[in-house]
Image (tube, rainbow over all chains, first blue to last red; front, side):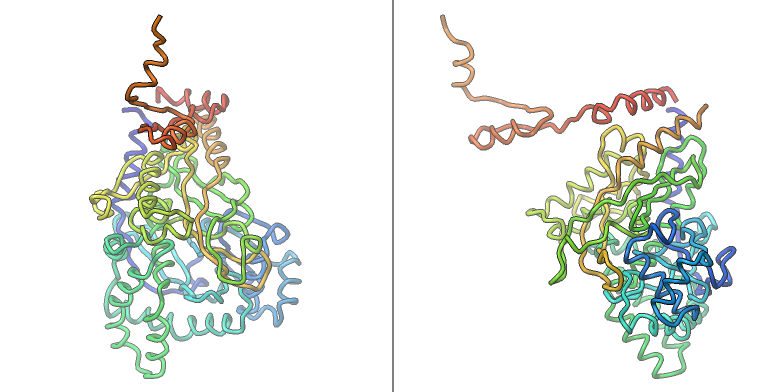
Length: 414
Length: 59
């Protein structure tokens, strides 16, 4: 085998051996390098205020109000446009976030540690509501819930982890795959498994009966609380394959609602970008495709590590979301993703595909050669500010990102 | 003289279609079994990409 194949095999092994665990809850101000009150991290590759889509702008406005830097959305928009706010990608400062993914100074973040390789990453709590900051919602429930995360949920989960010890996310991911989930579109079993793991310790550490009830009322019905933890599982795993010489495996896929960006292992932190694709999906009435923003969020870090669209075969119940008539289409998509990946997992398997290991290691060479682009499961935000989530569906990563990366990879060889 | 083409199409056909699937669909629409092989030219025929990929073949 050659240098590239050897490097890619190393990447697949690291992805598969990664063992991410939820180890702590910390504040962004204490762990995110260089962050201050005027820093807003966001999903996707770098972007300016002027280039941001409606929901991304709306989420930024909400975050500035949450941080106490503005009282109204108009004030927040003026501040964001003033040049005083530093915008930067989550992925470039150890974080990830769904949809707009805005991460700011005062937010409590889940700390996920890759126990195999030692690297850490961070993600805010999932809002478990279509009226969410991450979808750009301006609903009155959004900001108070962020303060509740900061004052109640975050400290409680932190104390619970101190009593319980780390919660193994790889174990939850592995088990949820056997329970009909691909962990991007459908995360109900993962969320239930997380609740099962954390709740006994929460009962031990939360003294206030009222607060404990609030926490249970938030976590227990949530089908999405594990979305963010699954993303952090992906980020912690994918960061372990960065900078492997000669490695053509994708280490990051992400979108900011305007542009889609990827990074490639051997090419370090360089982004390769193309316009975000449209999303094919189903819409909550009265919304339609005409209302949809292009694809958005860091959540396709799940596809980067073999979950989501790559593991679609685990979730045949989802095929209606992209208009397929047969549940066989789910396995067909996973088989398609196997054509653009370098290996399979030994322990994360899809039972209804005869325990097929999930595809690991998206290879830019294979994407360019086959023109099969990674399929991504995703939520859909309204294109205009303030609406929140309006549907869910699938998209394809743009081929142009992989073509640019291939060209840069060849150039890097001299 | 016997028309070999007519003879062929009046017999039971075993068909494998490679590439464009419209032909496979046409056979199936006529209740004629057909195995379809999905195939596209490498990199969709994009010469620049084919050249880049070829530079990596020996690495």
